[in-house]
Amino acid sequence: MQPPDSSAPTPSITTPAASAPHVPEAPQLAGLEASVHKLENTVRRFYRLAVMVVTVTAAGLFVSSGGAVVMVVFASALVAVVLHAAARVLSRLLHIPQWLSVMLFVLVLVGALSLVVHVSGPELMVQLSHLHEALTSERDALHNMLNSNPLGHAVLDHFPRFLGGNMVPDGHAGTDNGMDFAGSMTNVLTSTFGSVGTMVVIIIAGVYFALSPHLYANGILRITPVAYRSTMRTVLLTTGHALTAWVAGQMLDMTVVGCLTWSGLSLLGMPLALPLGLVAGLANFVPYLGTFIGAVPALLIALSVGPREAMMVAGLYAAIQTFEGYVMSPFIQKRAVRMPPALTILSQTIFGAFLGMWGFIFASPITAVLLAVASRLSAPLPPNEEV
Image 1: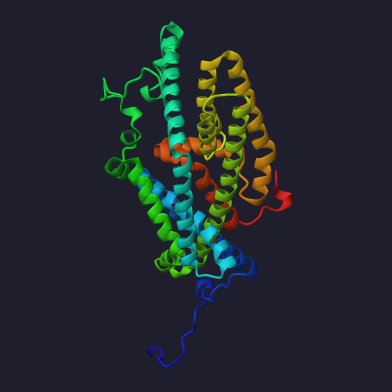
Image 2: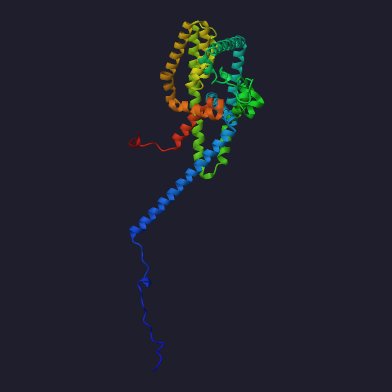
């Protein structure tokens, strides 16, 4: 018996697994690509959301820990916006450099304020002193009247001392620190320099910002990553335009309200009409809620004169605010920044809760900037998707 021939070819046994690889069909490939594309979009959106949450959290922690400093910087930016806008007009009229027009405008302001103080300063200071004495007397009388009543006493127990109530802050028993503005603002600047020193810092920083705004804006752009510089440039330009429009509109609004209040109180024969008009105009820097703050001193003074005078003063303020809210404010908002009333009041509440008095005062311009930036960076809503 012979062994099998090894040179003879052995038959190949093919199995289904050893056949040619299976190639997915075109619909399967398309479905796989769509799934990968959806997964990439989901990861990208999650990454953007995570970056946004981290950024907002970091900004919130920074603002909550150093909110007073942030508000001082923002107030300096408001001063710079006013100076820059006025200097730009002077620069176009007189054909002089921007920095020279800023210095010229500052000198004109200082001269005008010096003239006003020299001419009307003593009389205004006397009237403001009388207003302070009258308000203190009326506040004490109202406090005593309410405190003698059980219901009034219960109400006063829920208000702090600096608002005329009986509540004493914890750890400050027997003291009345709420009346001191610098003491109530627990931050480094106000506790070190006081309110006057803070105002000086704001004005000086605002002048320097207005002298060379491009220097600071380009510095921010340089430290911004290249991929986001275009967006940051849009944010800076939008912020400048929004602040300019808001400040211009609010200054016009304050001037008209102050003049109308002064004229109306003078016609009614009320004492201290000039300082009360000044208070009403300044309080109108805070929309809506500032209206009630500016009306309180006038109503207290009117109550000391008589109930009839108090009713007339209340009617005067109601008429002025009706004109301001339904005639002048819509006219200004057409050329400035349109802000919904509910959003304005909510922003004052939120910023006031987190940043104290600074947040309450500057809530409206901050909200105007946020609305302008959000409107500029977001895509417009198609008409068929509107509610």
